[in-house]
Structures are given as structure tokens and as C-alpha cells.
Image 1 (cartoon, rainbow, N blue to C red):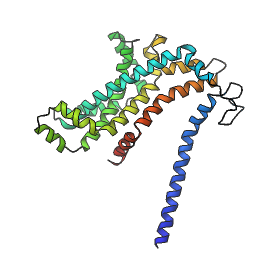
Image 2: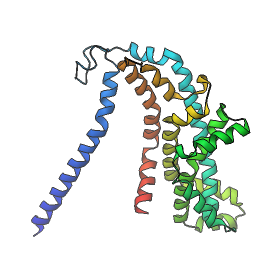
Image 3: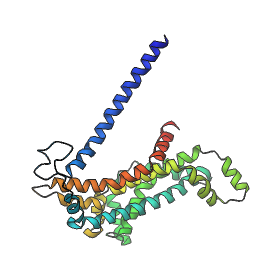
Image 4: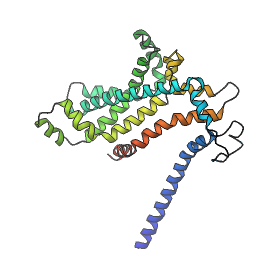
Length: 279
């Protein structure tokens, strides 16, 4: 009987790992192909299907980074991403802590409004955002774009952090309150350190959202010099011919910062996602 259960468990584990390995290969292969293609030429990118190029053309990265003001767009995206993520983390953590721990009139209604905002697609808010930014004279300015992206990221971030704060024990907060800590110090010294896993999830979600955003930037910006990085990638696509090696090099450069952020925060992200799924 024990042999049967061991064989069953081994079979299930083997099939599960094979399935997960297949999913992982399916996800990783396009990235590997993108990196390999970035070292090829326009003539060999499709004729040479090997993942290891016969000759590495490192000049593709130089041309990709210097062509058409790519470096300017790259710095723009870094500025927008750092600004938005920093603001979202501070505002959403304060709001979520208030919703979780403070009792004030209309608390549940205001929280439901934030939850309802999650169901509104970003394109659905383009017209009111355009009108509002025009009236505030913030259209075609970095501040206007940053404020819009903060608004996009807040509902989900507040929901995730509020859910996480609800699960935290209040004993440490009560002890800190007895020692004379204010609500703001309790948030800074206790709530934030304990919520690192969920903060990592908030950071990576908002960083991906801002880093990959392009459509809203087209609506807000008239000046090309203010556009984010995704605008630069469009320059490698001609009307009739697309320079695929340069495009792949540009995509690789674009993917590197997000991959680095994920690798740095990987253990916190796993703990945060586990907390969401399993409470």
C-alpha cells in the first residue's frame, strides 16, 4: 500500500514539474531568441535559426542606443518610473494603513470607490484626463504624465496593501503606542518593514506598468523629447522595412532594468504573491 502511494506521489510530482518546466521554457525561449537575434544582422536574423550566432554583432547595441535619441527616451522612462513608483508606494501605503487601522466616517464607501476604479480601463479615462490636464495646463508636461500614472497605479496598490495590513497582528502596534509612538511612526517603523513582500509586488507591478506604457503618453505629450522609452522602439519600424536586429537590441536594453528589479526583489515578490493566494 505504501509503495502504491509513493509511486502515485512520484508520478504526480514528475508530471507537475514537467508541466512547470514546459511553461518556463515557453516563457523564457522568446527572451533568449530576442537576445540572440540582437547580435545578428538583417540578412541572417531569419535565415540563421540558431540561438548562438556565428558572429556576434555588438555594434547593434551601440546603434540602437544612439539612434534617434534613444538614450534620451531611456532616461525619461527611468525618471517617470522612479517618480511614479516612489509616489505610489508612499501614498498607497499611507492610504491602505488608514483604511485598515483607522475608523472614520465613510471609510468603507471611499475604499469601495478605489476598488471600483480598478474596473475602469485606462483608455476609458483618456478623454476626461485630456480635458482635465488641459484646464490645469499640465498637458505636455512631465508632471501631468506622472500624476496620471500615479492615479492609474493607486487603486490596485491600495487594495493589495490594505488586504495585507488587515492580516498583520496589532500586538506590535499596541506595544509601540504604549511607548508613545504616533500613528505616523507606527506606519513608518512597524507597518512598512513588515509589509516588504507586498511592497515588492506593488513596486514591480507599477514599474512594469510605467516602463511599458505608451498609449497614454501619446495622448498627453506633443513634444517628442518628453516621450518614454516605448516611443524609441517605434523608430526601428519603418513604413516598409523593419530593422529587426536593432529592434531586438532595443527591446533587450528595455527589458534589462525590469529584470534587474525583479531579481533584486524576487524573494519578497514570492512571499507577497504567496500571501495573496494563501492568505
